[in-house]
Figure 1 (cartoon, rainbow, N blue to C red):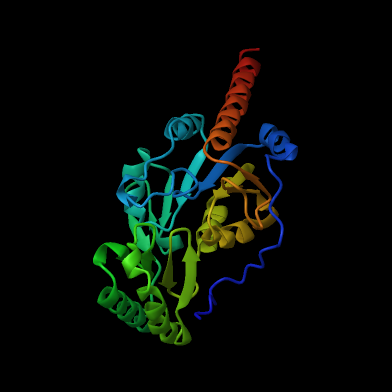
Figure 2 (figure 1 turned 60 degrees about the vertical axis):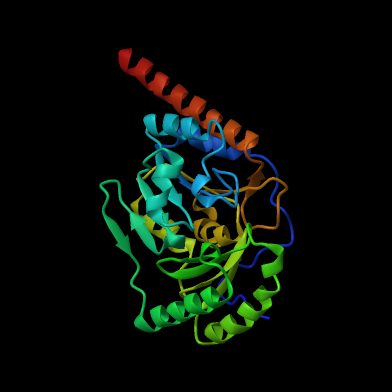
Length: 280
């Protein structure tokens, strides 16, 4: 059995309380702005085997665009490659972190990535080759800092091969790679790469007075929740709820859409109040 060995997050045994806490709305009304950090798959868009067709739930893109028009800062932190997000989302957020924070796509198209040591590249290439020896290429994805195996569309006759691949990858874990499960598969990842790195970078660049809100659905988002801590509101977006260190949880897509629309009403109200005060 492969040890997960990648996350130091101590996930509690309880599900976060349902609904947005009242303090959030009070703080939003007093804040100098809003920064939204969002996961993509499972948070803004349904999980699907056809990953290139994972478009947002109806109304989500429009709700996010309206918040951007009111001055909200929008950042996506995804396990996907960063360049895939604008096409799927139909928007160009202020920041996009892909591959769990290993790469960044800036608004002007500039790309940057975490430097991966040569020995880690060698191990990831070995993991990629081993996976392709057993599984069809459409199930295996090589990324900037990881190798992923997607199980959502896996034929039943191939499932007995997974323990064989796990045994093969276990040696690579012992040599320093991290093994992580995610919703719909598993991966080997470069050590030290996780979404918390992206959150920390974004927090350093967040304007003073902004209220930070972080939304995610998967266990890979727990590092981000932990990094944010009490510096903002962490929200688990999940249809049933699950154990998490997030501060609260909401169900997609209805409660997520309601949340975004309520934020719009609050920000719009603040803007109108400001215009009225200036006119007086």
